[in-house]
Image (cartoon, rainbow, N blue to C red):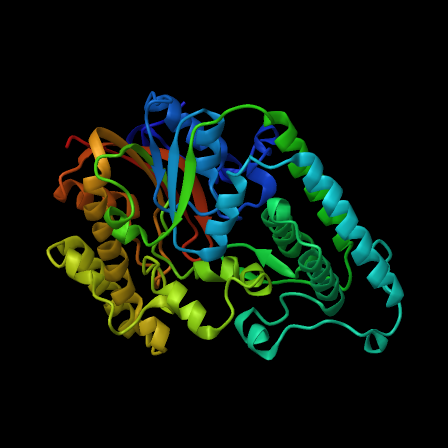
Length: 438
């Protein structure tokens, strides 16, 4: 049951509301952002908006495809826009169910055996932790350029070597029909089994995983994918497609008046560098090869943190006439000066706040032409206090921007609350409901 936030009093953190239900793991669990919202939230709005197979759902910030996968399961056509090359790849694979599950599993078993044989020849067992001297092993390593791109300590030498051996075998005996699914399974294992990464408010490096069972975990993920595919084999499903593009230029990607509903969660204005969340798999699997690749990727993102702000950025011109946003930016700057904060990043806090809301205004403006009359929109957003504890009511401000662009503000639903360690407050995560009358 959806609740209007104006009628709700929240006294505790509802973090469990963001967890995926066990019955929803099929397809969704092939690879998921830690920050992804759950499938049941998408279902709530499919039902609430009374959507059907004759309509089209759009997720303009589709991440790893929760909205698209759930729409496909419901038989409703859907489109996604995603600027992160790896996330776009993950979504594209997760919505591709036209794959022979038996070929996927049998070929993967063959590749796994080849990888296991190579490891044994080197004195390494996949399922038995290595107890010898690592210096004696001929370990595969990342290039100096790759090492500069990932977080230091992201992955230990032996798990990395096993992943690279598996990739080497997969490349050597590639079958195009199943290759992308096999690669996505490696990405899942890379992050959640092989790496030392830990995910909290920001991605970081935790306790070192000296060794891990990489090949067997990969085969287990492949088997899970094959089982999901067997469940839908022979069935027909609504068309679903993900586009690699900037959500601020959505009118250049999608045809006019083609979308009936939007269910999405854009970035929030905070210091979370969204490019770091998928950095390890993006680099090892070749989606980001150089620093220039990373910079080009950052430039097509909404400016939500100071690590992707550039001198030429001018999205803030879109919100010059919004006094409340200007006041928040000024408040952040005054607070910075009062506290004596002088780092380059801290000096950008006020500017990135304006760039964020300007980028969202630009997105909402471009979106208008692709919406059909009476299109319904749900934006999952969260209040923030990352910038020197100055409160940013994200949902409220986005609703005001949308109204100024011709959207009708319908209501705000409370999804959950999150405890902010900096301010010791419960921050609202809300769903802003809009309507485009046309």
